[in-house]
Length: 397
Image 1 (cartoon, rainbow, N blue to C red):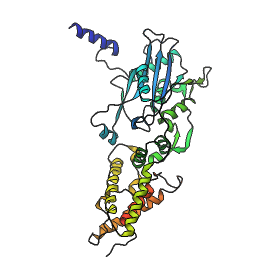
Image 2: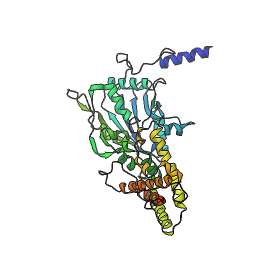
Image 3: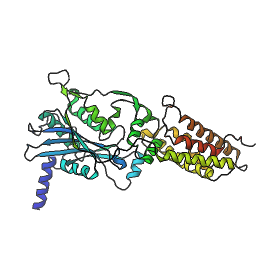
Image 4: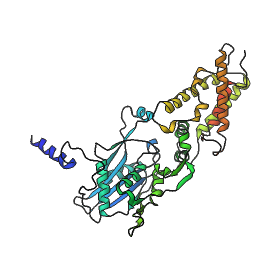
């Protein structure tokens, strides 16, 4: 009985009255924790890792007050997820849930030491009261009632949440003036980050549609942690007042990256595509059909996946995907080249062959002429599908 009472007292101390909801956003008039003049708030930027989930880097908040009793050194991490049963299914459906978690800075840094990834810190030019407000907001956000959010890779992730939180806490005091990036697209930045992972780069290039080929615009590149770090250098606090100052006070390297930088190149999927095209061309010259029977099944399955991601999930970035023109779901029915095949099937095969060849040629167009950018492997694969369906042959009556 005594143990239960102690447990209830502990919960009450942590979350207030037991069972009482924690308001979020916190009441601006509520009393704040007192921070000393030694308190600091900073943004941590972590370099990419070798796993897919870490290939783009990471961002977190750090709140420090080493003069407090007891000393405080806490990291707020919006990149926490549960890798449990059904993870990949939720990811494919666009229903992945991430959470804001807290950890000690020592525990956070230890993970990056083990993985060989680097960590940089940007200290923010905030007063002790400003730090208290930021900490109160993040602490309320980390409560189990409010910590979960639907993860959107390009628009709502651990990096984009930094500016979202700062604007929520400081409002009009914060001036965010990102460069209007009309020279690059989301796809351009993703390709650069995946240069050393050829198959992943090909897969992501394949499943993402027209939305990622739009210009980045203002702050569009801040979904990547290293680009966010650059953007923060231009943010101003208390503009047009006597206290006007850059938000970032200092920037320093806490931990150097020990991982090699991978070159930016398409890699072996492009070579594989040219190999498939060569074999299909050889079969066409010899009048054989083996690979040219199998390939439409493989591209048809690929097209079925693209159609599913477009029509049956919540992913906005996989819609309007022109890759379905060369990898079309109905290719699963086969080329339809035999005389015994129904006339409609032979006509449909001819149309799909022409669409695949046209998409292959479109993939060679400069970025300004083609509304979607294609992976270099699309040209040989699209031409291989063109050879599979032999659209230059008119169907017999």
